[in-house]
Amino acid sequence: VFDKHQTTPYILEGGGASISATAPSGNEDKTTFTGLKTGQQYEYKEDGGFEGNGGFEVFLRPEQSRELMERQVLELYEDGWFDLRTAAFHVSLVVYNGNVKLFGLFGFGFNFDFSGMCHISPSATSFTLEEFQEFKPMYLLFALVVVLTLVFIVAELSNIKEMGLMMYISNPVAIIDVVSLTLC
Image 1 (cartoon, one colour):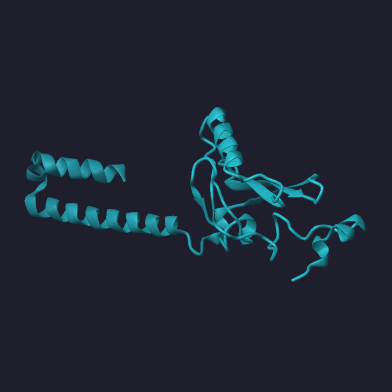
Image 2 (cartoon, rainbow, N blue to C red):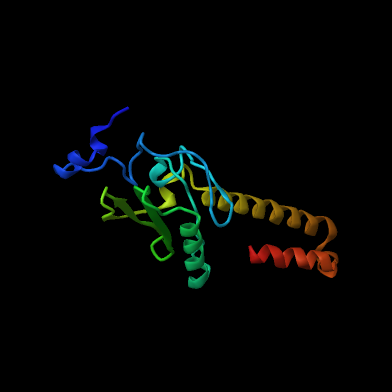
């Protein structure tokens, strides 16, 4: 299949390459490849990549030291991740701000044209997980604690009535029950 958008004359006329880190492309090489240095198998994921557009994925753990992350990026380079056939890649970082209960998704798309020039497109968005909750389980849990506390208080009052107050107070287990109920 011939795609005029991938030819040099079209690009020289001012047209852009259709391969992008932010869009699916039929021109992508989706074959599994083996890393040249590590021998690790890298598989294409149809629903992976940036925004689920498909792609090869690698996760670098941000809690690691800078030196270790640099070593991992160098290892990816030596495995053949970055070469003249690389058309685009995307780097994402998710952070959480507990003060405002928001997640931030920051990303940079790196798109390479036919001459090797890199065009960077930053992106940023925020979201909260509260948008996805259909009900508030904390209210249900609070109601359950109140109901169970009332049930236990009624049970202890019935024990006091049956045993008598002096006999109830002399029982160490009963004292523990009363203390735990007062903490609720």
